[in-house]
Length: 557
Figure 1 (cartoon, rainbow, N blue to C red):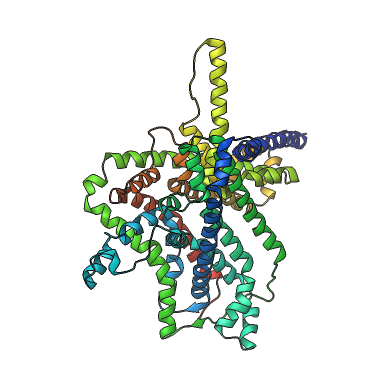
Figure 2 (figure 1 turned 135 degrees about the vertical axis):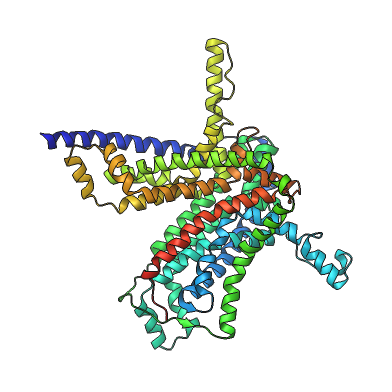
């Protein structure tokens, strides 16, 4: 009887969990559905104006930016991953985790720093003029930083670690027998890399590039500052410049098509290209580099670190310390509180929602639950500007409906109850970053054996009690990691914050953008440095993970 009662409780809870997961999925998907449905709305003359004037520029600029960033990140990420994984040279152990450091800095921060350093009155050109006696721009040529090429370089320096991480994992997992066979057949290190290791790592590289291109489409601060007219810039201009929400929503829908094509291309590539490793994973002697080859390897691996992190961080630190009283004023601490509140609240909500989705899928893995969970976590692939438009549109409609109802019933106006509030901004963050939390939590939950669920039910525990009292303590490490990742992503997020934030509620990211737009780069140093400092947290976690997996790596001697 006790067992039958437990089964009834479990079945009842299972139905409740299913409904709860579906409700959460529908809530998260609502902004994306709103954006897609805007295609059917007539936007009047504004869309025709965009179509005949700036839309071709948005499309071409976005495509060229994606092409340039994709090629650069592949070259840097794959090349450095191969060197630190399959070769040995001085400093290799340090460089293998230091290559992750550029992840700590948002692209827009690097854009502001390098503009300050490389513009006409910056320290670099001033030093060149002093050294060679030049007096004007007509005396010499210097590349323009605020351009499409500059945006490609800056974004590539920040995003190449995505390709580096996945490529390095792929190289570590490759069969030693296959690589040994290539050597026995006379392949030198270069031919072994291009003809064996690179094709085997292709699925991982494609996945990394897909992440890079999605982040490229999401970027707003860099492209806007460098006057590169991408979709993110167009959405912001159409919404706030022209005041046309319908046209902005339709631009968002067009950008969403780009993202969905990227996701489809990545999945198609994985299905079309499947490689299987054969043989046991054995110890393999690495390619030991000496002389000029070792020097070249150190330069190749050290240059992205220097350009993507050390130089910008050093410059920010120098500018922030020149006037500490002014830079670290009460305004700075107020913005820090705002950012910390938003990041902490979003992290907590994400860590609460993610186990619900993961455990719901664990209880029932039918196709309906799988579709609900997978679609609810697609938000990370959607640019922040698109999510912001998708969130504000229905929230504004709800506010207007409530206000109209209160006016007609009670004769009072409620105004905007949800629009421009922290609740709406946190919801936008949740739509954007739920996938980051879910993937981490789901990975931790999958390591817990199903027999623990059976044992808990046999002892009379319902599903909720099982999750809270048994699974949650076992997943504590994964929950903490998920919270940290969401926290850091929220701290760096700019497009969604810029559009959805409450009135007079700026964050560190918004302050950096505002000051840089006013060419007050020295004042932007302190908040930018704070964002970079917080961004180092996941880099440390990833570096620790690399250290912990050394015992599983190939022994290079």
